[in-house]
Length: 290
Image (cartoon, rainbow, N blue to C red; front, side):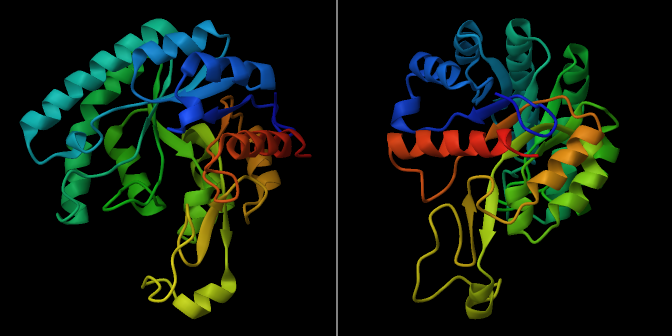
């Protein structure tokens, strides 16, 4: 199954849902539905299972994200050793691979500048390991507690500090939209660093911005599941992302990776039938882009 613009293979990110726990069954279902890859966690054995089923690996999660940015040099060193061993295991089985990470600090109470410097110290020694196998670090800009490398302001100096073509981005427009950052402008600037793509969208509720603003949670209401009071994540095409323009940029700039659906949508998540339908509707939307 391919995207309508760019002819990129379509896959999805494995979640913790009960129906996805049996990986052999999940891989079989994925192949039957025409998906081409799965994004997996930090278990090297899972990668072998997926490859044996005839699927490709979209990305594999690094572990110990927070310890890689610890103020304790011993913790950083031990985490680096574990990451190195995992990268070697995965690339031996799968070849050059995208390694997924969110830049969450160990201590979000420290200043952002201090945590940025710790992050640089932790990840810079990983670059030669990735380069040796032709692999990439793909950073997702999920704006969790204290997270860095979510915005252009911290991505630019991070790439400069890494001094490596192995440092890159897992492009997910949903997080940018949530933060009110234009995904099209972002992709025009950073497309050369994009090595993996997540297909997820964000719907924004303009009237609720008047009601709640952006700085405070609601007092008499609950946030959307997979969202807040003024926005929620959706399947691609149900939010405000300009997918046609995004894929045209990816195609023009020579992107050669996969597009993986990350299903986080209150209209689909929660049941096996709903989640399978959400994945298939997402893939259908992507395949019909023109």
